[in-house]
Length: 136
Image 1 (cartoon, rainbow, N blue to C red):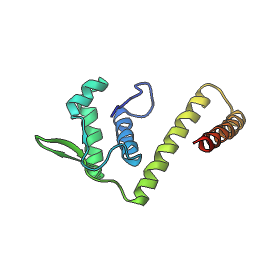
Image 2 (tube, rainbow, N blue to C red; image 1 turned 30 degrees about the vertical axis):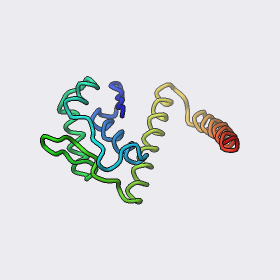
Image 3 (tube, rainbow, N blue to C red; image 1 turned 90 degrees about the vertical axis):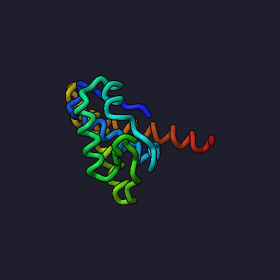
Image 4 (cartoon, rainbow, N blue to C red; image 1 turned 180 degrees about the vertical axis):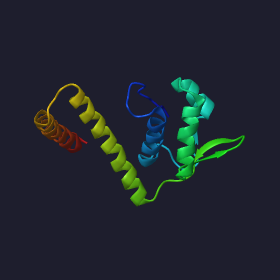
């Protein structure tokens, strides 16, 4: 399990950590009973403040996704139900799309350029994906 943060992002680091844990759960990469890194270990690995990771873990705990057991560690408690899972997946996809749109806007692209490029790249991606599915 590998976490990556973008210190330059407008998204707070604790939110980035939360989103990654939720995305890993939604994708099935983390399952109930899986152990997360300790707060201290993850803070050291990411080179962030201990309290930043602690806040992310606290928020995830309050949402019922993880549970910290004193002296044992932090564990995934369960997979959200289908409705929550769909919401988490959509939330993550929207976050990805917003980040791309924000970056394009920051670089000076107008909405017509963004839409045209998105449609072209989506069509290209679908062709590639369909070709790979047929080959499999």
